[in-house]
Image 1 (cartoon, rainbow, N blue to C red):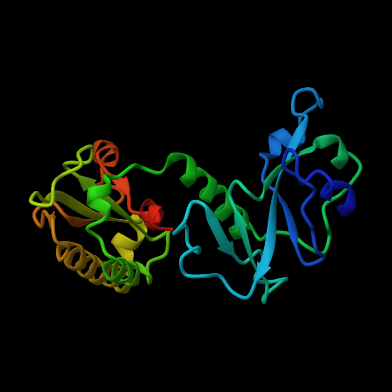
Image 2 (tube, one colour):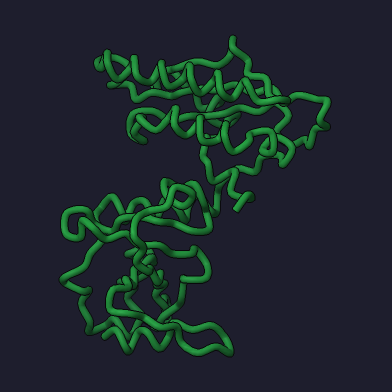
Length: 253
């Protein structure tokens, strides 16, 4: 099956890429597209060519880049395996008819977590907010690392970091400041019942706000910024803010 698919992993005018035995070919098409009733409706399947690396690299893991993703495909079945792929350069269209009589590789499959991360990565690439370059440049690498360290203990299903920028559509001069509000939106169950978890989130919030406020030309509104339950964070507030994600700083790659 692999040689049949591999010959389609090519760019116009170029030879097919080499697919080694330890490479993973991951189907990234939607399930409903893969099982569409006719080939005319969905003639192709999208394949992501993932290559092994020693371990996920800091600049490419946890959605820090929307161009390259380093991840572990399945910690239970392939504990030592880490993979990397480029969102565009390693993505190919393969005729769906090739899969009609071929089952997936029984020895390799993504964990549910890995599959969700790949889908979220592509969603982030398509839908991430655009922040002014003048704002992003005020967050230097040391501050970026400190902000990441501040929220490292938080799990995605416990709290979400959201940022509101007053001058979101403006490239300000060096003599002007961006005014922002920071919200840590906490899962309602944690807010109500997990005292230790809530304390950890409050500590992370304090560190995050402090580090961001230290940036020259960025002023955090201490009165608006807060840790808030997901039950209380409104739809209007969601529309007025962006989820904080280090991929928004990926122009630095």
